[in-house]
Structures are given as structure tokens and as C-alpha cells.
Amino acid sequence: MKIKQLLKPKILILGFGREGQDNLKFLLKIGKKYNIGIADKNSLEVFPERVQNLIRKHKINFYSGDDYLKAIKDYEVIIKSPGIPFKILPKKLLKGKILTSQTDIFFSNHKGTIIGITGTKGKSTTTTLIYKILKENLKTGKAKYKRVFLIGNIGKPVLSYLRDSKNGDIYVYELSCHQLHNLRQSPHIAVWTNIYREHLDYYKSFKDYYMSKANITLWQTEKDHIVYGADYKIVENIVKKSKAIKHPIKGKYYELDFDLAREVGKIMGVEDGIINKVFSKFKNLECRLEFVGEFKGIKFYNDSLATIPEATIFAIKKFGKGNIGSIFLGGYERFYNFKDLAKVILGYKIDNLILFPVTGERILNDIKNEAKKRKIVMPKYFNVNNMKDAVKIAFDVTPKGKISLLSCASPSYNLFKDYKDRGDQFKRYVILFGKEN
Image (tube, rainbow, N blue to C red; front, top):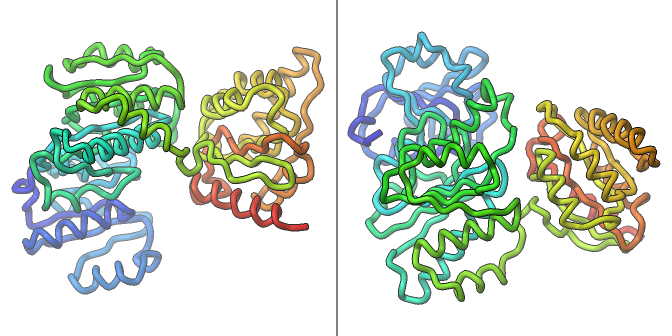
């Protein structure tokens, strides 16, 4: 949506998290006097005082509570935040309204080039690698671009970049399925890492989920590029419909992230030596197989972003058979299938299972059934309800010289704010207990 189309007198910011607050700052900076409204389930009092003061200063209407969506009826343009599912929006109230998003506004008004990255897993690592490669290439003086920015989920909210956007800018943009949903534009270079069953509490179906991600390539032209994980059939089938130049890359998970980033570097004219230099210095991102440290002879790894079983399977295989002394499993219920995970846990001879509700119980049952089928001894298991107890048990039961791995194969929301909170608590208690005599 072009900014001139946005200049309607009545604009509603729907959802007031990180993006919603950025939307407000952008509208206020444009300089036009709007009748701005904000609608969020949370009350105004839960937001920082500086945000509350800004809203009061500009006399902005704030709608909250269970009926916050009813505010839609009083506004012409609705800027929806990605955290609000489309399926809960009242269709009758949206009739005749202009529905847009921060992503749509940025795509329609930026100057320069967007490199967009999506996928169920690996997008943050891939995005960071691409950004670092292009940033390093700028130092050579040979780059055909002038500036490079890291934006989206992993970087800063995007509208703050619009006012200074220039030709020759590169935007490395991590895009979630929620940001891509209903988008009718695609980046010049699209990267699609993989696809797994996730966010099924947000979408009506798995197809609805992956077709949201498909928007990263479906609107590309013959001059654009799509770099993708070719081992994923759904991705492969969708990419066939794209008009873009295709760059299929074989591989799985972490290794694939590097190969995808390398291919983007090549498209952008970066020499192999620069790419290899970036790779050699790269450290795992926070909560992604992050090494916390060695305490009391035990190596602790934080893989809290492993919110699906496939990610945990990859982590287990990466460390090898017989090397993991304890693993933290379980969390919020999204009805994943844990049977393959059960086979890997037994096959890789993990000594101890530390289990969080709700899915910890289902994971345990699948492991029990698999152990019974194979006629082998079960690992020891421990049910916990908080991270402090979980880490204490890990110190007690993990054999010295082995790994204790937080890789839960489930989301975190039932016991923690998010995956980062889960990972932060893990690290805090590991360091706390690790320093005790």
C-alpha cells in the first residue's frame, strides 16, 4: 500500500506490540493529522510509561479488552499486526475497509532491494549470515550496493527505515508466515529454508500456513531469484509455480542455512573468500545450539528455539550417539507427532529425560511404546514444572563428560513467556548451580 493511499483521516493500529508501536511512530512522523486509534487486547497500563504518555499527548483513542476488535467499525484503514490471526477478524466489520500491514507498507514504498528470508526453522541464522556476508563485502569497495540493513523479525521494525530509504540500499528482511500472509508482493531475492507443521493454532490448516509462506515467491518476476531448500517437497512444488530464477539447494537444517546464504552471496557478486571469512567467524545465535558453558564436567547447550520435533532430532544427531547425558523435552501443546523423535532418543542412547508439561507426557508415552517394541531399557525420566528444578536435576543426573541439552521439541508458552525466556532461565540456573560448591 502506497503512503498516499494511507493518508486517510481514520487509521486503526490493530495490535500494539513491537510492530504496532513502530506503526504509531511512523504515522506521527509523517506529519499529517490523523484520527488514530489503537486496538489491543491488553489494557494501556501494561505498556511502558513513555508509550502511555505518547498516546495521551496525541489524544489517541485506545481500545482494549475482549471486544477490542469492534473498534474496526469506526476506521477506514486498518494496519494489522502479525500476531493477530486473520481467522479471528470479523468479516462484516472489515467490509469496505482497507486492510494492510507493516510489511505491505514497506514493500510498497521502499527504495533499494529486498532480500527476504522465510522458513519454519533456520530463517534467523540464514538471515544473519546473509547480512554479515553483504556487510563484509562492503569493506572491499567492490559492492554494487551502498548500504545494507538487517530488518524484520530479527532486526529493527521496518517503517523507521522508510524515510531515509535510498536506491542502492539492501534490506535483509526476515519474514514470518504472519508477515507474509495476504501479501501480494515478493522480494527481489527470496530465500525459503524449509517447511514443517507449525503454528496450527494460528492457521485453519497446514496448507493455509505454508501458502502464507508461499507469498515470498509467488509474486516474483523473471528478473527475481528464489533460493530454496530442495529437499522439501512442498517448497519444491510451490517454487515450480514461481517465475523467478530458481536456485535449489540440497541439505538439512544448520548446514543448509550456510549453503543458502552462500548462494545469495554469489547472486550478489560476493567472492568465496569473503563468504568463507564470515562463516569462519560465525557463532551460533542465541537459543540455537548455543553453548552455555562447561560446569562440573557437564557441557550445557541452549537450543530453546527447537520448538518442533524435527529441530530436536537434528540437534540430537549433531551431537552423536551416546554423547547426550540429559535432554529437556516438552512444552505447549500443538499436537505434533513425536514418534520419530522417540526413535531417535532411544537410538542415540540418551541417559535421562527431563520433561515439562504438557507435551512431555506424550513424548514419554511414545518413547515407552518404542522401547517396548524394541525390547530395550527406558532412559530415566523426571517430570518438572519449572526451569529451576529441571536444571538442578540435570546437574544431579548427567554423567560427567556428557552433554545436557535444552531442546524441547515444543513451544514454550505454557510455562514461559516465549522461547527466549525459556532459554534465558535455562542459562541463568545453569550458571547459578554451576558456580555452587
